[in-house]
Image (cartoon, rainbow over all chains, first blue to last red; front, side, top):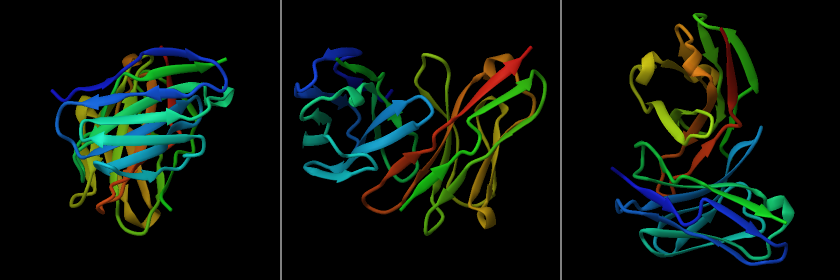
Length: 112
Length: 114
C-alpha cells in the first residue's frame, strides 16, 4: 500500500514562528501536493510539485513556500505563521494522469 | 484557470431516497474528474473517476457518476441513500499535462434522516 506520512498530527505554534510541515511518501511518486482544508471551503491547493526541485503555486500560495530536495519528501514552510493559517493541512501524492491521490493523515495546525 | 464548483453546501435526505450531487468545472479541455468522500474524522476516499469513454461510470459502494460534456458537469448519483453515506463529498478535477494539477471543490455535506 502507498503510504503518505505527515510528520505531525497536531501542532501548536506562536504567531511569527517559522513552521515546517513535512510529508514523506514511499511509492516513488513524482507528483506531490499540499492542501489546506477549512470548513465550507473544501481543499484548497497551496503548492504542488511534479519533480525534485520543481514546484508550482497553487491557488493560495501567499504566506507559504515549499521545498522538494528529494523525490519522497515535500515540505511546506510557513515563513512567519499567522492566526489565519490555523487549519488542517493535507499532503497528497499521485501518479498521473488519473490514479487515486493518496493522502497523509493531516496536520491540524493552530497558530496562537 | 481551472475551477471546480459544487453548488450545494448541505443536502439532507431521508434514508432510502435517491440523490444527485452536482459538480461543475471550468477547464479548456476535458479534464480528469473524480469524486471523493470524507467521513467524519476520516481521510479522503476515492469513489470513482472519469477519464474518457463511456460517460456513465461505476464506483465503489454502488455509487455512479455521469459526465455531461455540454454542461461541463460531473454528477454523482446515489441510488438509495444509507445512513452510513452521511459524509462530505468532494468533486476534483485534474489537468493532464506535465505539471499535473489536482484541485477540489468546496464539498457537499450530506445529512441522512432516519
